[in-house]
Amino acid sequence: MKENKNIKNLIFTPACNTNLVIWVMSSICFPISKLFATYKISPNLITVLSFILIIISCSFLLQGKLILFSLTFIFSILLDFCDGQVARILKKSNDTKFNFDHLSDIIKVSIIYLTFGILFDEFYSWIFFFISHFLFSFYIYLHSIVSNIPKVKNNLIKKDRINFLFFEYFKLNFFKMIYKILIPLIITFNAGSLFLILLILIDIKMIYVVFLYFNFVFIFRIFKNSKKLLNTKK
Image 1 (cartoon, rainbow, N blue to C red):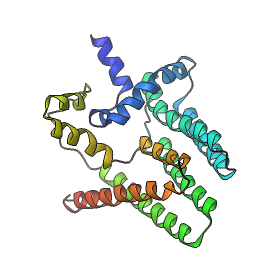
Image 2: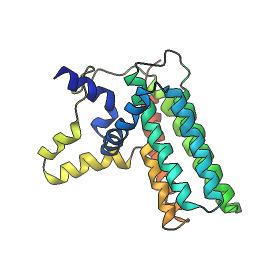
Image 3: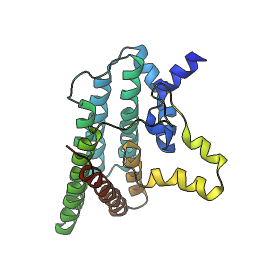
Image 4: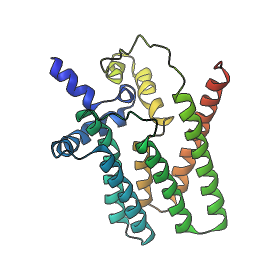
């Protein structure tokens, strides 16, 4: 029983408690993470591989090779989930304040914005992508500050175990269940959110819809984080 509990803690993070996409992606990536851990491949190397794959995928996109773009892009996102799992399996936690994985994610998203700017290369497109990137950067800045605020202990989630809360939502009535499962997906931006970029396989201009949605999430989160900071005493 204890062994099963430890395995669950290796696979799932607290974010899995309320986000079904992260739970699914974590489950899919665990066999890959175990393979990396078996060969003692460091989490930082996996992060670097993910970063390189994003650059390669963006290069394919600029060349119009959408299938190759999709494959490298998907694998890059999968590696984003693997590096944390491998770190937990190998017990290689980051003891410094320098978060290489977080920095890599910020640069990767910035490269994606730049790539679409180059791809469309129109005045209004550049303005749109610039504003979108500004909102992303401001959201990340506020999120990093809020993350360092000491959190109040939550009695619902114990520190030593993972509760898969969204499974409990099935005990609720249908509408409440849909609300509890969908809302965290709609108002959260994470690695899994980037899968929406693959909608460009339907039509390249779908990227405007995707980035508009991201902007909605960023504005919502900026508002929420600003409110938290205003209510936090020094």
